[in-house]
Amino acid sequence: MRPLAIVLLLGVFIAFDGANWLADGSRFTPAAMYYMLQGAWGALLAGCLFVAILAQKASLWRNLGLLAMGIGMLEGTQATVCRLAVKDIGAVPRGTNLCDFVTGWPLGAAMTTIYMMALIALTAAWAMDREA
Image 1 (tube, one colour):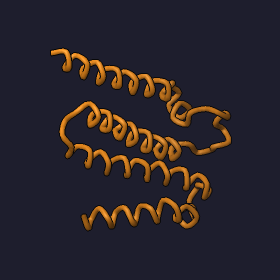
Image 2 (cartoon, one colour):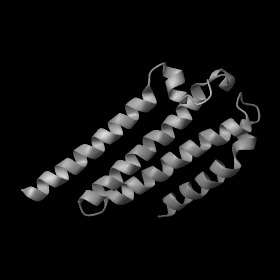
Image 3 (spheres, helix red, strand yellow):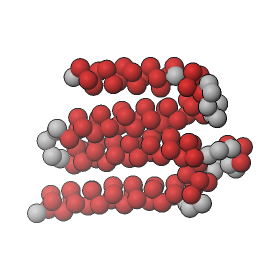
Image 4 (cartoon, one colour):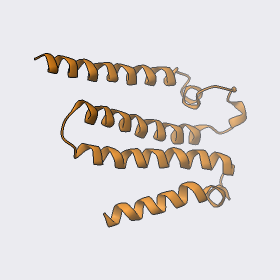
């Protein structure tokens, strides 16, 4: 528990208080740094919960929790990485997904579709298992 507590304490401090001093000397504004730190913090928290949920007895709710935390890790990481890749935030059209802009592909819609397909597959497998 000690290493986890230290990682979480450092993580929360850096995520909420580190934007100004981390932005100093970088190409990012404090607001951009805050955005990236929040994505990383969300991914870290989702990862911790993912590991905790893994220890639970197998059930539909456990699997849904794992799916939710997996999505949280992916989305948090995606927010951070895609913002890092954007050199000029002013060039991104208002309302555009940053990863869509960076890759030129409809990544946001594709990821949402994959999440929904995973949710449907999970619940369908659970329903078939109940009938067996």
